[in-house]
Length: 396
Image (cartoon, rainbow, N blue to C red):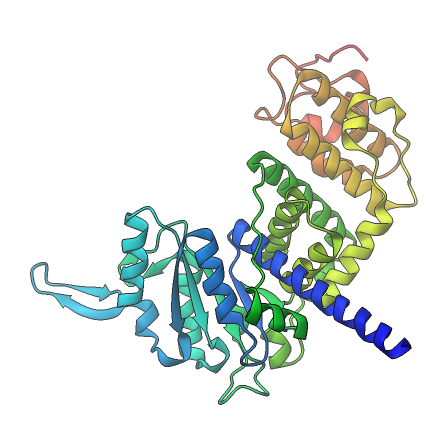
């Protein structure tokens, strides 16, 4: 009975992991982040993507990447007899995607078996996945990219993914629990849920996510870029400025969609790698930031935690980001007060980083002037921006 109970818990855990993976895939499609699904052969990756296309009413174009040449993605060179110039003719699969787009129907391009694709072909894949260009035509903006890969140690004639390609993809581990297979054969495969999200919430969350990542990287600059030691690890997720931005995009979309923390961590792991994601999530857990809107409402209540430079940096970032979403004279002055408090606490470098942007004309509301407190604490930046030489200030 104990064994049965343990097996049931294990089954529930596996099913939940599969459900979270499905949700993470949906978030990536919503955020327009290309995905690679890693798993053993025969794990239903193709079936799920095809079912997803049916559920969403979009065309699924399956491209067996290992059977294609680089020209199938970069375009087939040809001479235009009329113009006398060289062209790059698109393959049939790209034409079909464009034709569906002209009919108002979106597409998912499913690049299968990319881990058995030679490096030259992997390099050619970058163009359609990142820019949407295939030869001389561009895929519709609504096109989404999903790839499937088998680990090189089990793939026939397998190759590690080239780092430039790997660093541009969200990596998700894919496995089918027995219960999911049973249900798939009897009542149907699980659906990929793609939530509707408010665009403004995603944009605000993206700004917040970048601010939090900036605060983290200020404390851990060695993680801005960290190349893996082995070629196998370099074919998976690892941190670079590009993948950190991807992480911010996925983080904001997942938060706007109301995803649980497990899905958020899964997305971060798949964007920047488990070690960097683990440090970042632990950083977020320990931050315990004050509500930026609360500080903008009552800036005098802010007490600078001098011993927690990481928290101060993140607070400055979150307050400036919140102020930027809705700029009024009152909120602009409140943000300046927070920055002045940080400078007065001996952390002027952090305050000046945001004060320089805060004082610019495209941020400062028309007619708004820094107070005497701002003038004193932020003098170097305000002088640089030309606000001290005018000899004017708002009342303290």
